[in-house]
Length: 105
Image (cartoon, rainbow, N blue to C red):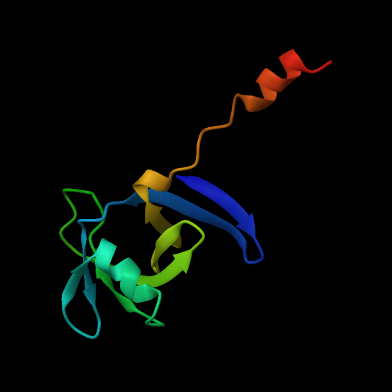
């Protein structure tokens, strides 16, 4: 899980979404997250429930649907965590500064 600072303070982001997971829309019906992303581009204010990858979780989580710079974003209203595609996890650059110190004078 990562954190990002923005206009509204610090936000936690979990890169854990998989395209085949299901989302239950408040307006009725279930769709895969892949289909939900397509719908979110044209349908504002989608709300519903999802079960994130925890196999022990049996109760869906209330989420708000958004499109972020990383694509689909599901905002968990209870925890404040924004869930995004697992395959869009940013690279770990923690050792980059040390590497540059060794190269630059």
